Length: 119
Image (cartoon, rainbow, N blue to C red; front, top):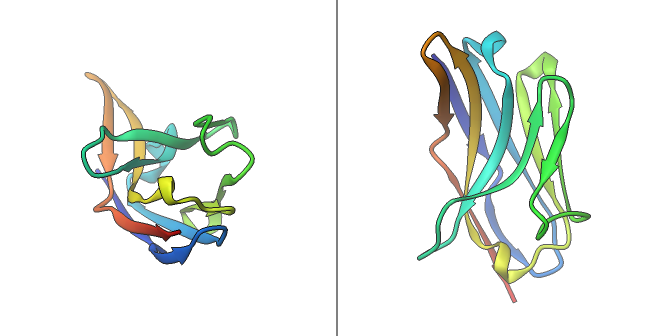
């Protein structure tokens, strides 16, 4: 089992910055990939950024050049630095972890943190 706790959301003006944090606990050695998803009202949840245990990153086209995913292994924490925020970045942001199990892959989710960008 993996537990994920997000923090760092809030209200920011367009053009501003926020940093989200996701602290992982439990069977963290089993985690293959961690990332951030977001879900805006009336829209499907979408991938924002991901980071594999090997260090490979993947970003949604809409955030490339503005958002950066990183991790601190000593703190078992993944971060999402968000710069140049736009109103369309407003959403609930969810931390995600992917872990292999004997029956396949298992997805873990945090509780979500609200990011609101005012224009």
